[in-house]
Image (tube, helix red, strand yellow):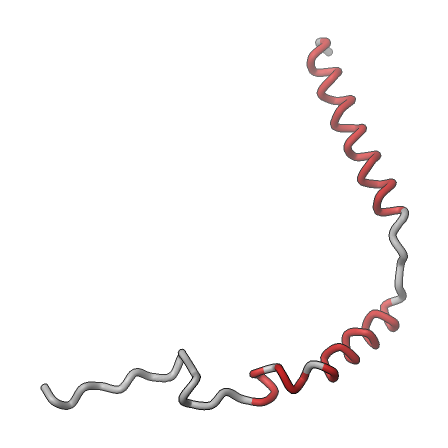
Length: 71
């Protein structure tokens, strides 16, 4: 290996090691706890979710446009 490729490989390895240390410090949560948290979040915010509450036709930007019958 040449000197510049060795330095590049060392920097890449250092970056990888830093990322692994960062991930190792994260708190891990069980899948069942994460699912319960997501369910609770969804239930708490359901009143603001247009998929749950629906969208009134006057504020729906995706409603079919009216055709001008004057022409």
